[in-house]
Image 1: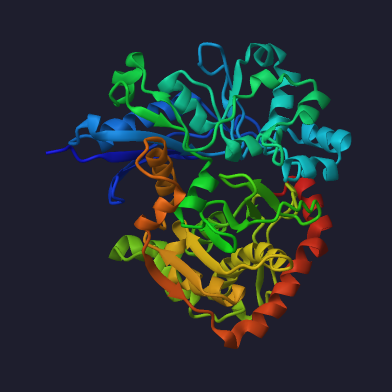
Image 2 (image 1 turned 60 degrees about the vertical axis):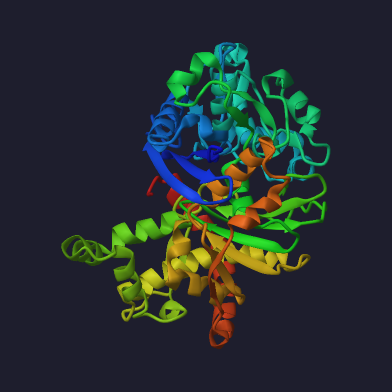
Length: 510
């Protein structure tokens, strides 16, 4: 009898590495995770020790394969947090911590890029606006402040590619992570000589590019015992976490779109258009095959706004849940429905961590607008959930000017919340589809890459065999006019409050 075969996916997240095991037929077997810390030695800094990623990766393998024959793993693939800057030496070991996506120390370097290249030219090379959160400004910061580390750096790596390198000894990356280096030409599908040359950066310090789903190599003999995988296990190049979730969600064709409602949140859709609009406030990134793109935008504090609301406004629900063992999220939903659509005239601007798209404003600040003596906790909580939906709706509204958005799926922790799904449906004015892989979308996309690299699957459409629709939330048309009016006020409010937010940020009243 032949041995059952498995695909192992790991995601190197911000707070933990998560391992997920699937059968090659698409059955989810189990998951596990191992946590690590983010260090912030100075304001605006956010960094991690890449060896903590490796330790968590190894721990996960040993846990998830406890009663499974390790040789039955047909392939392993890794996804991970993007936009980092990890310098590694020729021995493949870190020369310092990774400046992760949340690190904003390179503001001066981002401004330098803006001045030398210009927003329009930069966007028409990268498909993105300049931000200190991406890798290129961080590399410039390192070159300025630690030139010895820059000179010793063999490659600058992203989280998933560091793990692949430890497993195989091979240095690679692919287009999803490459684009977030901010040094990748999306129309030529290569590192940009213009951008690297403008700042005297050595192109040889950026890893070779391969397509996602490429069989990179096999687990090395000297690393097998440590990592918990047999030597010779196929190792397949995965994707950045956002792209992995896109594929795992089943968003594969032009007009397909999805919301990822995690700590940071985004809306992405598939586009056949190569048009680059530098003034759109939306990124355009390469899909996994030439000529097809992913457009949309990301907000810093989607699920984070909900977590802030829970901690700050929902102490009674937290205390009751601890006493009764009820779900705190269910109790918060019971509170929210005491309000009504439109939160009785209260708006929330969800800019608790500054904001990325479409404003690229680290000094943006959150706000409640429309408070009155009749405002309740229920109204405030309703407005927080609506504010996140309204900000993500900015991307859908912009897309609708030139694209046809046909379907909208939702994944991530917030996707489980039926009250929030209804808010999204009402504000977007379209059905919101929840599938059976909401929590595992990124893992599933990564597992499909493993299957492609191992020759088990032909292409990404294999993901559809894993998919089942769990719910479809229909919009309530009686609220469409109300939400359209509130959306317009929401859109204007950022600009109305921008100066005040910047002054307060400069005073460090955060």
